[in-house]
Length: 140
Image (cartoon, rainbow, N blue to C red; front, side, top):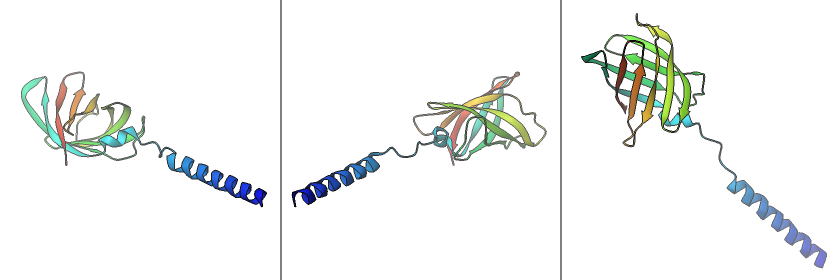
């Protein structure tokens, strides 16, 4: 009888330990790029011409990986769309490069950053050999 009780206590202890370890196991690691996923839009300003303004829409899917294609940027003003490749995500900064032109007559030049701001917007800075485009993007 004592052996049965000891066995039952042991069995319950093992079950409790297994349940606690399972309940406390970390969830699947989240993808840091997913914080940037969604559709964002805003107006860009340019360093080469203070009067130049262009409207853009950035689309970033969930699940992007470094070195992989990760969405697109559509410049509505000049009717060009580029494919973006994710270079890195470091903290609140998503670094990308244009991997190819998907539509329009605009070359796929340069790369840039999208910085997640405390108000939930993104600040975009895109550098080319001739100019830098920058502006705030709002979620859509």
